Image (tube, rainbow, N blue to C red; front, side, top):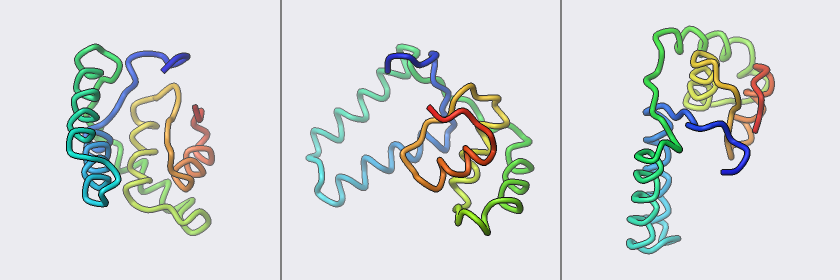
Length: 116
């Protein structure tokens, strides 16, 4: 994680998405149970060590989300959860936005977030 400002902020929604992604890989038999446990343990260790910091969704996140949806969804095809992630970054004044999702990246770019 070189070059990142630490801690990397993650919302409870982001934490849920990470946990669920690992479990989906387990369901799809793309990882073994021991690998899933190791991934979860590594994430918890990174939280403990200050690599990640969980921040609550600010009150204004849904206001930002409504604005983003109204302005960009018809053009970009973004889903509600992707919009909430981007809105959270805006509300938290994130210095950079990290994603592996193409639509989320396009929305973040349209919202003028720095894509890392």
